[in-house]
Image 1: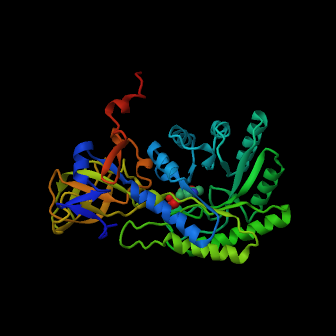
Image 2 (image 1 turned 30 degrees about the horizontal axis):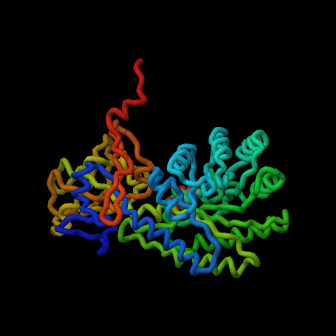
Image 3 (image 1 turned 30 degrees about the vertical axis):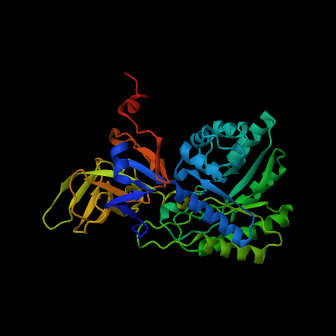
Length: 427
Ligand code: PLP
């Protein structure tokens, strides 16, 4: 979101103490830039909110939001846990030197091979999502003579107020064990009876880009009620309640997210009121940790003016590096990085270069006078941008640069045409 905090020097957007126009020159565009101190600040805010509320806690960065070696290394430095949802994310985290005992492995259809990989690398916990997975894991543990921590992902029947594609907590969902129909109880029994599985606790995730505290408070209430039922039926009390992620961020001035402290205080009150022994609380923020830290720099190219209609200003990237606007009408704001001090003169569509009419990154953007060669910076693109990037139209994926305290460091190289061809074979 455009705020007074955006800094500029000589009319240029500064990111982490580095001139963004120099970054565009040095590394080319499109370019993802992450302000690492913003990532560290957000993690520290979550931690101090829990400490102020007097809860035992764990922050587990949901790495699907942005999963490259360098970010796992930052997470290691900040001493948080991470969660992964595929063999690829797990492999990347391990290659980054991230400690496997701080990894939670999620996913609604983990393959046999992925589960073997998780067991053999001794991940901290496997989040069991369905009966098929309980059976596969049980078999692997027996054969490999291994024991492992597990949690059950439950579908608590709560739907958060957000875009429908982001809702994952309601009953009609592909994720988790349904509570209402008794699936959760059945799963609990199977896991408790398996001597190779240590049931660490229960998990639920109610959606993404959530602004209010109400959904999380309802979730805490529901999870405590479920834990009490499990205690009655199985004499089992969870060590951990994992409330998932989904904390919203400001993409535009219409977005008004809650602070970490607001949400954690309310959860703490709820839990202290209702539990004799409050479990350790885990959360899995993804977007809120990396989203606001990310910028995508583009070079402006062509322009199309149509009489009486909004002009199109096209950039050298688009849906291949940020699918979110095309996929679920996500909104962003941008600035012209080399003209921060110039007056706004028009509103334009910011168009991508992909062969889809729907490849519009921003529908209505206020702009100063622009020309080909100017650098456009879209703000808050750190989450689900690079991680969802693809090669549609055989466009190579951009590079990623980290900036901190006035220094910049390339952490993912730009894909080349050679890279694109590296998997193709002749016929
Ligand atoms: N945890 C789980 C289980 C998820 O499915 C997701 C996102 O889909 C997250 C955490 C992270 O959500 P967000 O990036 O919105 O914080």
